[in-house]
Length: 234
Image (cartoon, rainbow, N blue to C red; front, side, top):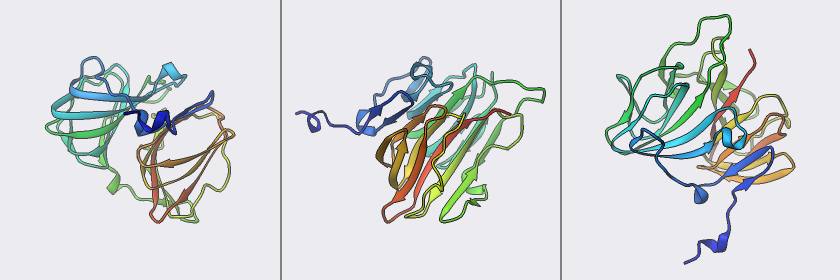
């Protein structure tokens, strides 16, 4: 049976990509055990980072990598080193870390990997925390942000969650030097990317190249929330 006669909201443009769950392809990455990855962004698309969703089954494991890593648990329980993280738990692992990432049962987690850009400051240390313990900051008009990584020059990227009450929107169309990886966690709305307007909902992923015009407005009866990565020049 044909799947919706070839229809999808997935869209690939020069300065952005929208990937929707109906078009996700799953495959294990080298060294994974009892786990698969949905690769959302990588250098193959022009990104300067790699982002994927790791899906674990019983006794699942991700091998260490040579780059720095950020992990955000979507569901289930994930063990990072000796720390057990549940949904909304997250970890930062410095470049070259040998800390193991595993799950004893079914679980899903966002994984972001990026080569570290050193500066004349000490590099960051390992972090294990929960978004629930991060104080939200109001940006006005029904928009809140939670900043998950410390805002200091040791870090060369940032990861935040943004929550919009129904009807809330960004106050302006942004266009800047930073690129983004964005995963919709809840709710939905309309995203402007370049000259395109897209309906988006939980589970969708967006990659935005530097200077891609971008704007979001939340629609529907429940809040919209996304996890967003950005690199930044210290």
